[in-house]
Amino acid sequence: MPSPSPLHPALQALLAGFAETPMPAIETMDIHTMRQIFDTPLPMAKAAVGGVQELQVPGAEGPLAARLYLPQAQPQRLIVFFHGGGFVMGTLETHDSLCRHLCQELNSSVLSVAYRLAPEHPFPAAPEDCYAATQWAAAQRQQLASADCPLLLAGDSAGAGLCAAVCLLSRERSEAAAIDGQMLFYPTLTPQQDTDSYRELGNGDFFLSRGMMQFYWDNYLPAQLDASQTGAVPLQAVSLAGLPPTQLVMAELDPLKDEGLAFAERLQQAGINVCSEVVPGMIHGFMSMPGVEEEVKAILRAIKCRL
Image (cartoon, rainbow, N blue to C red):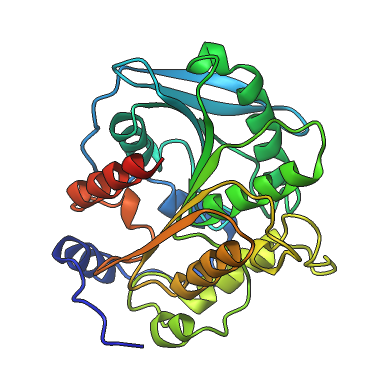
């Protein structure tokens, strides 16, 4: 692996701040304590949007909280967004900034969905919730955006993995509404940790660690689960044929970088239109972190030109 770019100064300061507040390793915390710490949104300026509405949308087994962001102009597309948080944490609030940027920069209605979390609700609760919410959004397209606008999925980290899972589920279910594209930001796609990026970046120096990821997957996937079950481990899906066009954004200093690149390669081999980039000097989760807002907006403007 070539020498990495310097860590972005804003992220360097953020990590230094984290280091000054010692806490137990995530894998040693109970879920309640972990959520109290990490579900507190980072202080960030709110990008202007045309409006925000609190909603409830159908999940697989009951209603889910959701938030609809409306652009200032007529929306050009409808984006259904799934937040990150290792399948065990994350809220509508923790990803408010990223959803606002998606709404503003892509001139899109954005429906952010609070799916059920593990370990209280292990796989397949989250992908089934996300699938149900996507189908509802497709049926309500005219009310949420416009009748003929494209439907896209977007998510970061675990949420990006859920986008891929929903696309796989939609491919095999004949009643599923068509998904016109997906935007995956540093996706979580497999519990395997045998890549160069895990070996070189997984010690926790850049926020995310092997232990954290193992904790997340252990809580999300039942021990007896067959990893080939649709949507469980997207990178290990037998085939990626038939998935929608995909935009992939990875962070250079992220242990998950190589699994994102491997997913991009498999999509290309399956004949899917895919565009992937690795953003220099960035860490996992950077699109919801303060101090890099201009870089995030530039990434989304570039994606808009390709949609």
